[in-house]
Amino acid sequence: MNTTMKKLMSWSAVLCWLIVLLEGYDLVVLGAVIPTLIDQHYLGFTAASATFAATISLVGVAIGATASGPIADRYGRRRMLLGSIALFSLFTAIVPFAGSVTVFGAFRLIAGIGLGAGLPTALTFMAEHMPPERRAFASTITMTGYHTGAVLTALLALRVVPHWQPLFYGGGIAGLVLLPVIWAKLPESEAYLAAKSAPTRVSPKVLLRPLYLRATLGVWVGSFMGLLLVYGLNTWLPKLMRDAGYNMSTSLTVLLMLNVGAVIGLLTAGTLADRRGIKPTVLMWFGAAAVFLALLSIKMTSNLVLNALVLITGIFVFSAQVLIYAYVAQAYPAEIRSTAMGFAAGVGRLGAIFGPTVTGWLIVIGSANPWGFYLFAAVAGIGLLAMAAVPRTTIDGLAPVEPVVPAATGGHQA
Image 1 (cartoon, rainbow, N blue to C red):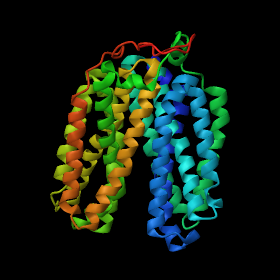
Image 2 (cartoon, rainbow, N blue to C red):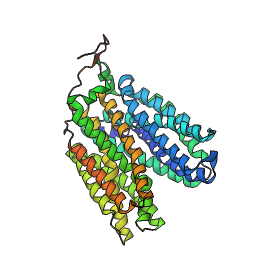
Image 3 (cartoon, rainbow, N blue to C red):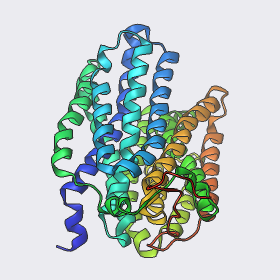
Image 4 (cartoon, rainbow, N blue to C red):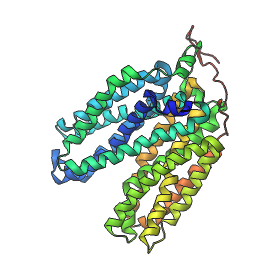
């Protein structure tokens, strides 16, 4: 067994995969219970208050993702992961005890902060755990946990709903069980320890210095567009297909095919990116996503052709975003890698909030078909342009980080 496979089968890789699985679990859990909450008028839930709960959860994830980077770069990946999973687990487990819609939303906000901090930190850790030439593969294989978690939640929901409380208990308990294993088995990142030994401390502002500005802005725009696609499609694709004239069974089947395609894409994109380069691969992925999303606007008379088209669309749409994370892991040096990853994920979460909102607006005004598909195709096109602007990096990163704050004196360098 080669070194790469041994690392992928190590405790570190498995634990990072499970951490990402928890975010995939959480992605679906609220959507799975919202119809029941509204039907039962639980705590007075309405469609509007359910939308508030869903949105505030994503706001929490954005806050957690953005804040996690500088903290992980200063105090370590291991501490960040332990803290984020503890926060998510506790506030997920107590969601059923909320006494009002406001408290329910507050619990989801705090759980989202913990969850948002976990994913980019886990991706950073995995990238640093693998050889530089295999970092794209490490990122994509780790993200298969995301879709595994989403499928797991859907299957559990089919078993327990309308008794929705066990879904939150289960998610919280799973995280709490994972905590002592992380404590015992997850070492600190060697790259972080090496960077920490340097006599300098860097500020997040370094991401906007001329040396990194082009990469940072390209990654932020690309990540925003990538997660807009992921959340917009996962939220509204069945409705878009219904508006396009397909029956309910077909509309739900395409969502399944989309996520099956996502797993295939994650398994292939990383390997291709490690061989051909991350930037060329992410450009190919965004370009193909734009083409196939536009093709979905055409009414298909054959379900076989439609499912094949959706499957191929899923291959390119979801892994385009993950390739951006792989680019960040390769492009930025260890001193600011987690900061760069956290900000990329945090800005992307704004796209995750915006995507379902703008698509919902198109549905309300009756323009979802075909303009919803054209919108998603245009978003993929903007993602392509953004990533076309970033430098094509070497495996050693863009360049060393210049000191911002000398650790010994605490003074500022001009």
